[in-house]
View 1 (spheres, rainbow, N blue to C red):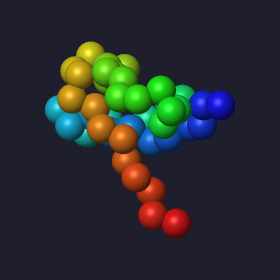
View 2: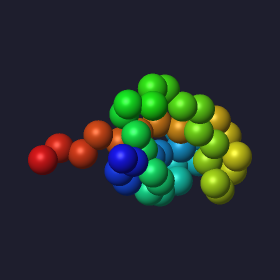
View 3: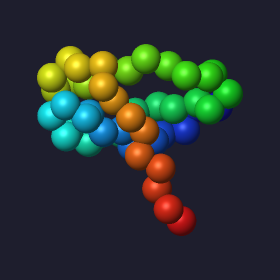
View 4: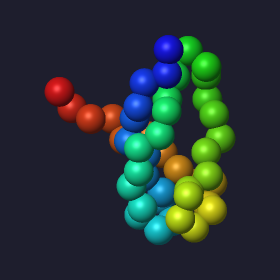
Length: 46
């Protein structure tokens, strides 16, 4: 089941939430604002 995770674009610094499934393996993501593919997941500390 996909959970929601925070992502950040390294190019324009835009942060957003999107579905994320760790079991699916690495996925290429595109920033919804600038269309860059330099997007990383933000690991939130609990």
